[in-house]
Image 1: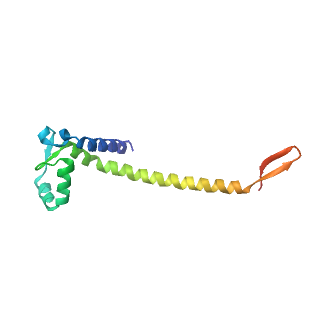
Image 2: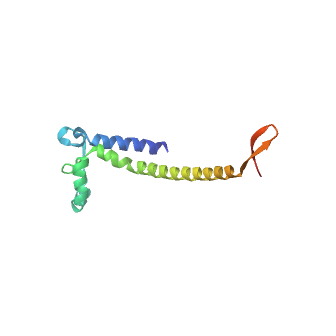
Image 3: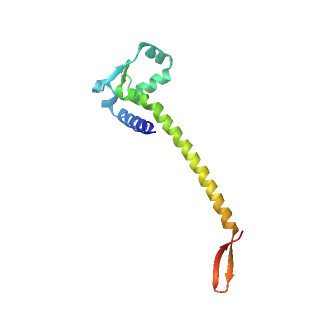
Length: 125
């Protein structure tokens, strides 16, 4: 689980850094990695993805910023962490609903009784 938490933090920091030109553009001095030819050719067939990489990740020619590569590397760990968060949320919500329904049932069973010395709250069987 610690790995997934670190992946989420690195993923969010990488996305934050990609908003700054000095981290996403080679013309500003950002470290870049060249795309393999097969990946570059595949991007030519998917213009929407290529435009997204150009506009958001700073793809210039066949060079991808290192920060974008890091974000893509940690993406599976971040996705697993988010899935686990949803499962834990659902489990907690189910348990809370069951607890609330049990408490409502207990409140309906309780009665008020009067004794010789005063009134006290008791439970009926």
